Length: 304
Ligand SMILES: NC(=O)c1ccc[n+]([C@@H]2O[C@H](COP(=O)([O-])OP(=O)(O)OC[C@H]3O[C@@H](n4cnc5c(N)ncnc54)[C@H](OP(=O)(O)O)[C@@H]3O)[C@@H](O)[C@H]2O)c1
Image 1: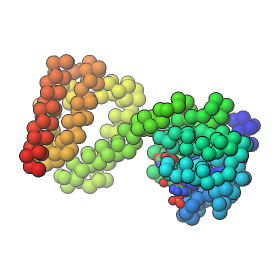
Image 2: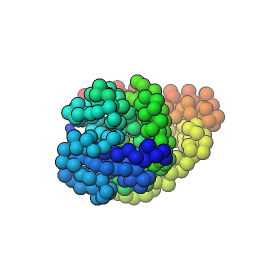
Image 3: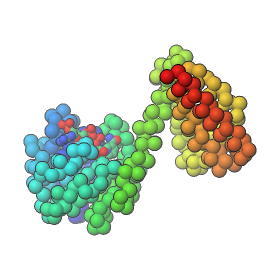
Image 4: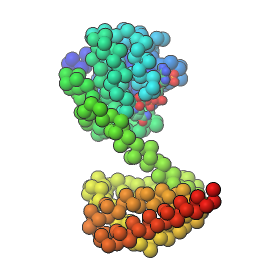
């Protein structure tokens, strides 16, 4: 880490889950986490507990006045108004952690001569203790002018993360991509868990059974890529098994059946790419999935 980075006084406005993870990570890396402010007391207490050397401030402006680099780690919609209500100077580096929010949300600071940047760790921050353990190796999407970008890249590296330079204008798509493997993955797990509940198992039973499958899937994709990582009846071309799934789902859980069909259709090109699904069998599967979709839409509109 450069001496200049190590000398910067870092502050946090917003002490939520991301601040409660990044602040201790910076602190452990030997950076100067100096001050923080949070609107509510609970989160402020939690951050204070995690980084005892940082000073809690009553007002956000005190963080700005006492720090050189300020993280606006507040909810996305609050970034612009919080930034706008503060007085910035040319010495400041102002950073938000939002994946989807454009840097223009920090324009008030920029117009005062501060440099601005985005620092978005691609990680799930549901629980700061878990997130802190999972921070090493995770990608941080960084957007800033070249000099500041290099500084933010060093900051990411200092906590064991992989910096990724984001070109301007791509934030919403980049951030949407993370949803498929974060929150939407949880939605998919819930689909699976609900089916287990239908035959009397608990959520804990279902998750215990699903975790090794999840780990196996992740490991297969990590080692072989998307197509090579895929097993299952679509990749094998087992039309009969797909039909059994659809009949069972459509009978009792039609909305799960609809989701299954959409996902199975997305699996077909991967099965072909993998080389285990012939184009003839692929057409058969697509036909089955689309016909069942039309039938289900028809019966849905009749019952309305
Ligand atoms: N959670 C994730 O997985 C994740 C991942 C990467 C990046 N991020 C980004 O990191 C940033 C912070 O997210 P988070 O998950 O840490 O959120 P969080 O745990 O919900 O915390 C939000 C923080 O924003 C503060 N806040 C909300 N509205 C405010 C307002 N109008 N004025 C002042 N403070 C306000 C809250 O203060 P109170 O305690 O007073 O309500 C709280 O400290 C967001 O930009 C988010 O997109 C999140």
